[in-house]
Each structure stands twice: as C-alpha cells, then as structure tokens.
Amino acid sequence: MKKFFLIAVLSLTVLGASAEIKFKSLDNIKGTNVVLVDDNAPQTVKITDAVLSNNGSEYPAKQIRCDVVDGIATYKLKFKRLTLFKDCKVTLTVNGEKITINLQKSLLDR
Image (tube, rainbow, N blue to C red; front, side):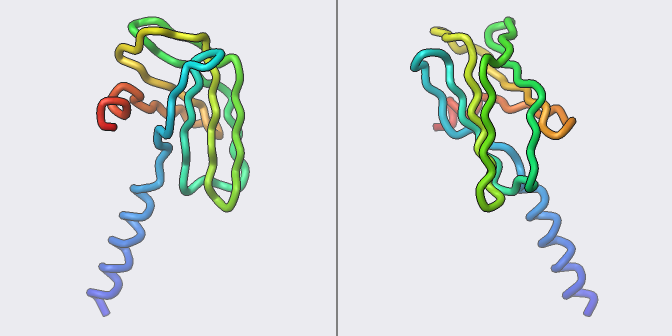
C-alpha cells in the first residue's frame, strides 16, 4: 500500500512539473510573431502583459491573443518587427503570475 501511495504521489508530481508554457514558432511576417502553447491551461486565462527582451532592449507586445480549446492554450504575441535575435526572452503575466520563456534556447534546440 505504501508503494502504491508513493507511486501515485510521484506520478502527480511529474504531471505537475511537465505543465509549462512552451515555444512553438516565430515568424517575421508584418512584425515579429511569437506563438506559445500551454498543454495544461486553466479554463480561463488572462494575459495582462507581454514583453520581448532582445539584445538588451525590451519591446512591449502590440497584440496579444489567447485561445483555450480542450485545456490547451495557444498564445499569439505580436511585437515590433526585428531582424536580429540575440538573447531573446518573452516575459508574460498570465493570471497574475510572471513567466519567462527563453526563446533563444528554444530556437537553438530546434
């Protein structure tokens, strides 16, 4: 019984740890567009702020869209069009919590 309980707790911990916002894509069509995905999103998601940090400068989002379908949230962020990407990060405020996604690492891992 103790082993079953331990396995159940560890399984829930792993599931909770894997729920995070992930980088999906970036394009430069009519602005720098970043798409992020959250596979385990709550029913209601409110993004109050999004800032792109690039090469020491910060750019606030010009447009923020969020769609939640079947517990999967897709965040579409539009920023000023950039031609150079160096040390890129996006900082979002989702439901009052600041979250930083390292775009540079995600771009290099592809």
